[in-house]
Image 1: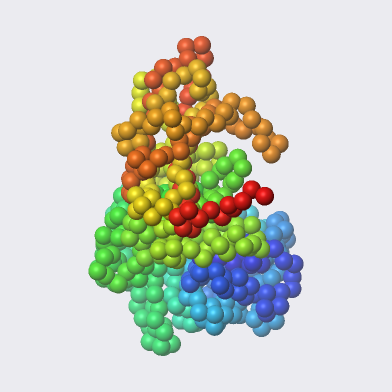
Image 2: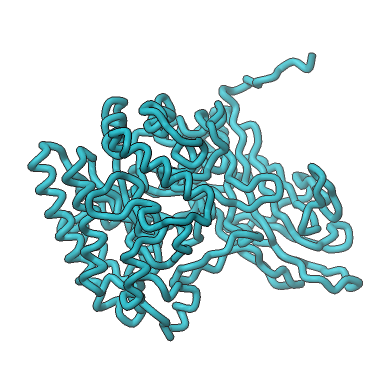
Length: 518
């Protein structure tokens, strides 16, 4: 579970001062949740840290007049804790160990991409006073979305600035290790990644040496986790030689994230990471983000989270975690705790309700700062006579559960925009088999007002309640949509906008939760 130390249960929601018990609230809320590891972001993207560091500036250290009320509050909290003699990081670390959690503070390597005004207190003097260390304009076409202000790791001064903080986290505190947050853009120009690769690997070697020294001094194992894109094709393009990291035992874990920035992606390609780390001491973890950008739900639902975790375990992940500090409303309710408790239990997840969905670049789901191909599978233009095929991965053994009488329903829902089902002919196939109209339920969204807002885009949902002979298989499934005949009287674009598979389980055969109507 990630905690950025500021938002949910951190220092943003409460007015100063905080007492000692409130400082460790983010740990206490994990008790009984099923979570076993806390990843704590000890610094922000502008280079500042949010604990009493001896080697780095603390948030707001270089601000006289504030221009952001929330960050102003954060800085007041940090100063008050220090004045009261509370070492925030030590309190969190000790509380984690007292309650049986692993504790891994971490830092972003990229400290220049988001340079905020000085009055926000998030950007360090090192970043503000050293523009010569910026990557600068990059004429490579793949760099068109990358911020020119990000700092280049080719400069020894930049590497040392980050290294000293990581070294402090390892040696000054009895942490279980550190997380190197390296999922952001390349720390150099794209044409320089081959030069960066050995330099960054050496930086990890130095960090491993620092971890070993700290481990020997404290008598405590110190692990190094690296968060990076799950897609192995991107590793080379951003200068990461992960095979060497694993073979030299420079790292203990890969935290794999989606190429779709902050978007809930259930289909992380963990294949290469799992294959590379099998029979080694390095583990693979899947990190899930929350945003779906829906009209009724902005965040992934419980069944969506469970589906993402089930897919990750099916692909061989050693663990699954939530990588977004804004996952839930806060304070957490019973629904949040119910969601969390299953995430570390693959066996229990197997028979839990799932909502599988294919990533759709809906409004708000932009993908900034990536160099690999991040075009979303959906939406796709639906033209007459030109089939649209998309891949849907599910982890469930539906045939096995069906034989036990455990499945209540399996639904495949295809949302098509601008299309009137009565005026157009559409064919939907699942794994090369046409789904019959006898299991189809149409849901008309041509114009609907739900919760005071018109549903957009307009169109229809083709909702198939699948019978056992049409159940999707475990792994990848092909969903194909064909516009067989188009209404000639309308000239608007049709799209395959969303594809969802919803699986609802019974607790036991012939056991319904509400058997009586009154």
